[in-house]
Length: 373
Image (tube, rainbow, N blue to C red):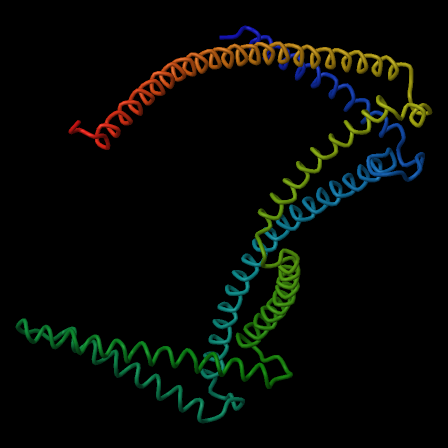
């Protein structure tokens, strides 16, 4: 293996290391200068790559990063708030369901109390008739069930009895449910049509129902507000992607923009080092001049390494060309030997042709000659 190729690899590695060191110095310088300049409009608008253009690009990137960061914070706050809203809504809906059931029981007890009062004229007669009818049905079904439970018999009788019991239990359950609905309806209608609070147990039930309704109304209003806020946050999230994916997208954008800002720092520092020193002089300090000197020294080392690489490559190419020349010279000699052999062969062929032609002439003369003389 050609040792010079190893030398080239070492020189290329040296170049990379020197370039990385120089880029770090210039990136740091660029960042320092941009921070030092701040928002001052210190440069005239020039062609692309000028300090003014780079400053403008830097500020746009910083604005984009700030906007993305604010958007992430807003989304994260909305996610937390949405979770709180979901928990509150679930809790309030559970409370609402519990209070609604409690209110239903209060209406039922109020209806039972009112219908059990003999001198109550506040309920229509047909409601009391309905109660009596349902109570009668319940009593009848309960009596039939008792009789069925007492019956004895064989296996088939037992099957028939169980079927009848199931039917009677269904009827009994239905009648009891209808009675509960009747009591509830009676209680609700009584409270809806009354302005005076009744006395006794009915008064307690009426007061309790009023308190529960008030609480339920407050819960309904609170739920409406909570759900409205939830809808609003849901509208902010939209349907295109989930909040977590949007946050990931914004985070990726910040990472990318930070990479771009380092390129701006490097380009800014390079301008200060390579040809814009006069423009940057108001912002350069003593330590910056030392840094620029180091950057210049590194640039020289990089150029020397590059020159060395070119010289080694040139030497390798020279040897390659020399080898090619020798190869072609050898090919020429081979071809000349072949030409000599070919020429010798051609001479032999020509001599043979001449002899053959002479013999042909002699044979022709013999054919045409006087053979009888």
